[in-house]
Image 1 (cartoon, rainbow, N blue to C red):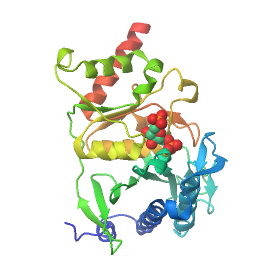
Image 2: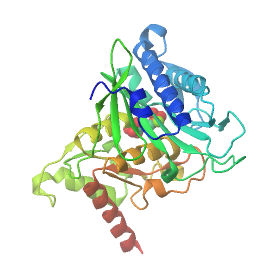
Image 3: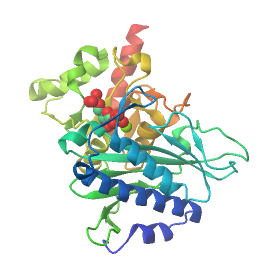
Length: 329
Ligand code: AHM
Ligand code: MG
């Protein structure tokens, strides 16, 4: 199976050759970004760029570099019409859009607060298509994504991709630089005993989230009658990669501290791509009330609550949210 390179995997699929070119450019961007991350200390790139992005967050030098690499490399794709990046306020149009052209949504370097401490970070992306000639709308539901994926810059560089159907993981081979298929059919186990949430925000949480976490923490003595483990890396790519490997549930819910902003994570280039990957791997992704992929977007940098992972746990959390809403009415 490891003889299968990303290029061979893509060319054996029934994908439009222009989408294959684009996916190869995305993979090349990730390879180059991995080198920047690895050499960050030598190149003096680990620190802050003394700039803020549209989210009002301080940008790291590597956030900007990673964005520039995506722009530079992917702009080669002849049918790529527009880029929507976490680091750029406006949509970047590369050409007059024609029906079938591609729209690329990406977070060039997610979890960049982990750079200083040398923990895993990643890039997240999704691709949609222009609906009709001249249509400059990029605000489509996640259900319209034709593919989604991420690169994880961890102990090894991996590129994880779904074009619908399966979720495939490719590991970059040191030396050749080839992405080779090492994880042909990644699945989220339906059951899990591991949850991931930033518990320092407990005081802000809504009742359904507190109930869920309290029940997990109660272990064998609580209503779940079994013990749960907890992980939080503050790097969504690393959390999702763990969930795709051994199961789990990830929450970044709306709470009293982030509700006015809509939540923490961004819909178009964080929640949507990860929701597609998790659904294709047999898991579920919801705000607690609505499937992430069914949200009608209102802006390119919109934030949403995110609950995703093993289906049984996500369904339990949806039930708790529904019950809470019914009680409140
Ligand atoms: P970023 O895109 O600015 O890096 O923010 C997104 C990250 C996610 O990777 C992670 O799940 C979350 O922010 C961590 O947030 P917190 O620092 O509140 O735990
Ligand atoms: Mg991010």
